[in-house]
Amino acid sequence: MAPSRPAATARPPAFDGCFCPCPRGLEPALAAELAAIGGHDVRPLPGGVRFRGSLETAYRINLHSRIASRVLLQVASGRYRTEEDLYRLAHGLPWEAWFHNRQTLRVDTTAIRSPLASLAFATLRIKDAIVDRMRAKTGARPSVDTANPDVRVQLFLQAGDAILYLDLSGEPLFKRGWRADAGSKGEAPLKENLAAGLLALSGWNPREPLLDLFCGAGTIVIEAAQIACARPPGLARRFGIENLAFHQPALWQRVCEQAQAAMDVAMQRIAAGDPVRIGAGDIDAEAAAMTRANLARAGIPADLVRVAVQDAAEAMPPWPEPGLIVSNPPYNERVAIDVATWRGIGATLRNRFGGWRAFLLSSDRRLPGQLGLRERRKTPVFNGQIECRLFEFEMRDRTG
Ligand SMILES: C[S@@+](CC[C@H](N)C(=O)[O-])C[C@H]1O[C@@H](n2cnc3c(N)ncnc32)[C@H](O)[C@@H]1O
Image 1: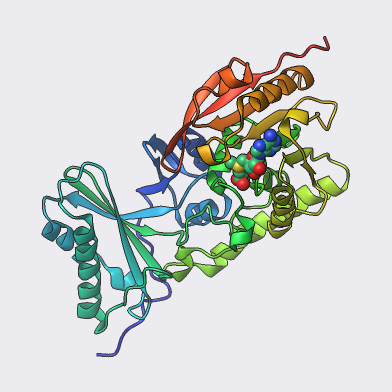
Image 2 (image 1 turned 180 degrees about the vertical axis):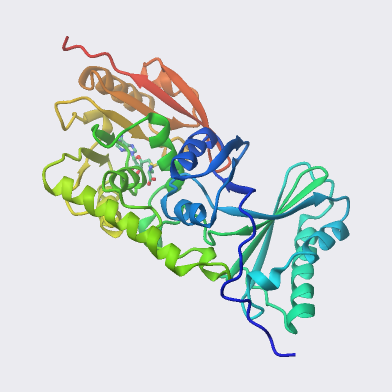
């Protein structure tokens, strides 16, 4: 039998159960972002946010979300006890309507309290079910490509419940497309969606001055500068949804054109003198150079962000109005800062940055003591597997 292509007009599954995973600690910030982008019934859960939406919502989230790691569309859910229950769940789905047997496939599994002995075997059985179904319906099967698949499927397992998702993002959304080679990474860079999440937790708005005193490769100020320019994080990349049969190029193009128009307006305002006050500093000249190069790669006009080679202990506010410092100083043993330097940085913040608020991400609970500052708040946030706190310090304004 000749392989049949899924109809180009294939209807998408209902977008009643969508899920965006995110770094732990950012769920409320992601829920607010998704509601602003157009998600309905947004519900933060541990590790992500559930919501309802539409194909258009999915396009908008792929393009605009700074905090989500990916957009997942639920296509089935059911009870399970064994891998064979999972096989049946997957085999009953019309995969042949969603993608072509010549496209490549990857299946991933995440689990919380699953009784199964091997998640790898569960993954294999889902893959078997999809390819068996495709072969039965179309006469040929898709092959597996774990490195660069056209289509990704996610299995999520809890104690007795399984959910199957089509991944509408493909590469994770924190990959914005500008951090391509090893030379742009630097020392312990933050993931882009964590950097954006820190900005969201700080409450920074683009009219306020912003400084990162430990900028490394520049991830935080790049996110901030893109926000100031209304440049969508997904502008320079492709998405998994573009490989699925229910992709609607005209709708996607309209979403992109609206984003482009908003960006043009923001850039005109900036050109007309609307101030963008974003600064970055690092003690390491190579890091500062990397930040400059990465800003350019991320589409930020030259000179929009001030970048300096500077010891944080020597920093001065670059603008008369107070603003926010958002940074992740070194906190692992390899690139640790010594006690005297911390004390100097604390004194600099206290004495020179009156009226500013500083948000510092660290896994080291001793940070406030080392700085000689008392935190106003500390919010648990995970940097990968590392449990951190985003410490907020408020520097008293001594001018009044
Ligand atoms: C964890 S990295 C920051 C990574 C950055 N957020 C990113 O995403 O690329 C910490 C940075 O602090 C810098 N640093 C260390 N001591 C410093 C100091 N006293 N003043 C300024 N920067 C310092 C290091 O050179 C390093 O680039």
